[in-house]
Length: 489
Length: 150
Image (cartoon, rainbow over all chains, first blue to last red; front, side, top):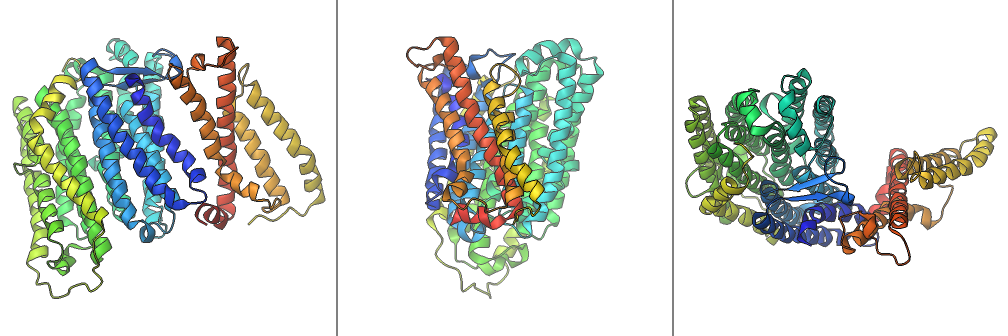
């Protein structure tokens, strides 16, 4: 039965999403427990799946029983299974968070909201597991469509940002599809494993190089790599507070994972290390992204935008990690991807609570919070330590391994870029803390009410996860190094 | 809000054409196993026939509760699809591997045929409902809002 789990992990949220309008026709308050129980089940299933995959090796699941190059294949290798554990965990926490603020935040469209969240989760699962390039496109599109709708679900000002996101996102998806069609024209197959066998003889083909560029630009838009990042801050800062954590923590990272799969599993480590200088390209762009993102974050006044730019800067760090062409850098990059997903979720939980409880959106107003929520500030300190990369947190170990990898590759520019972005991250968190602590708390918000347990739960769990990822960094990085490395690296 | 079309020509032609289109849609749906066709196209044709009906006879031509609830029919289509797929899983095969659809007295070929028809019916319901929902939400948002949230 365990070999069916990858399929179930995808089908469960999909079916729950589409049957939800019917199941919750009479009682729309059922939608929340239904969605949360689906995500809870997914956590359990993904853990079982991870342990099964680690023990017995990757699961190749053929839908309908049609074998791989012809049929639709699901590949649950250790990397995908590991990411999926993080995905279901973060989805679960984000749903619990969303439930506490839903009525005033979503304009009453509660069933819509849960349907879209579950569709998004199932599509992200699909991207992680997809064994062929076309299905990767399909799930990118499903994830993107539900993200557009989620950004605009509350209507009003967010609709403009959602529309802009839609235009750029569709452009990215079309470019990716164009790239896939070039690959298909050159190799005659769409299945990743099959294509990996055929591509080594086709590397001189212009279709492959051109297709690779189109795919890169398409996925670059999806993962908000710096020249293509313009949609992200607007979309995430004007999205409802219940929505932005799940978008910020998962969507861009999963697109990045898709790109990692294409470079290392479809093109193959051999090709990218020797024949096609794609690692150099993403290394340079990653270094630019991490510095420019951090500079832009420092210049922001709206806290949500600041964190959104922080996320853009961290995408660059992950790209630097995976582009070093050695095992240490790759493991560090993937480990940092997990950390960054957790940290982004935590930061957007924090700012969501600040907006819900105190109505504060700008850095300058943070002093008004006073001393009412020590647990909130305490967890912000942990998040800041993670973002900056101070020792007991996962952020430190991620950066540590990435820098080790860069040194191993004699890539001192990358080391410099990471250190520079670390300093800039420190700078914008100092800015936040300065306003939090130094401004005398003259104005105390009289409307500050009791914080819902769901808010406390989500912030505390994710802050704890940042620390746990740091303390448990050895076994996790060991797991990536021993099981999840691409062949030939 | 879409009002009934006021031309008698359109109304009479609609009365004649809509059943024909629906019959053709059903034919495409059930012919899908043997030739070009299937759930998606069949569903699109069925859906557009109902869209035509809305355009010709107006939004509230049918006041029955059923027609409002039908907007949630994508849940039903999905349940059929998931049910057939799930039965294959329980039968020991992969998802949607119809050979493992354990129905006594049927050969494997017949099982595959039956499984495909059932899943395509599910797909057709979903596609048709989606087509109508799009028209409804473009023409009168409050109907969607009420039926989902009321």
